[in-house]
Image (cartoon, rainbow, N blue to C red; front, top):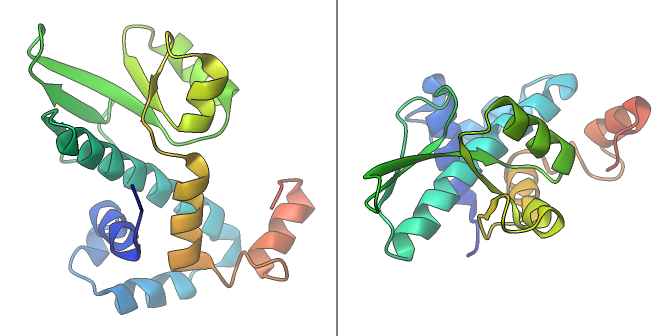
Length: 169
């Protein structure tokens, strides 16, 4: 599954009500104008929404009926699956490469099923989580390449900011 620019723009439209009807150029201009120190937060927010959309699309492509919640900040879970023995199942998604982040969330809500990026699933084992079949690196690249490419280039301001606070490029 390839993540394209329009997928990122759709995630922005879903996560930013003021951009719901914006064109790709308008979205790009919006993020060009934000402060460098705010890029990391925006990028993570968009990546999470993009992950939800891509996962639901992948499920539906494979014949599983699934849906996103209307609100992007739905408490506890992100995706609904329909059918099966229980009728409807809700799943929490984690768009990360951090196993500790996922295990912390699992400890807080042990009754919820978790779908995670392929990198995390490979480290944790399939008995604990669902491998969404989507790589965290692909999500990061799609968001960065579409909206923040100049800011995270090796010489860009975001890369310098991340270096200063101790985060890898």
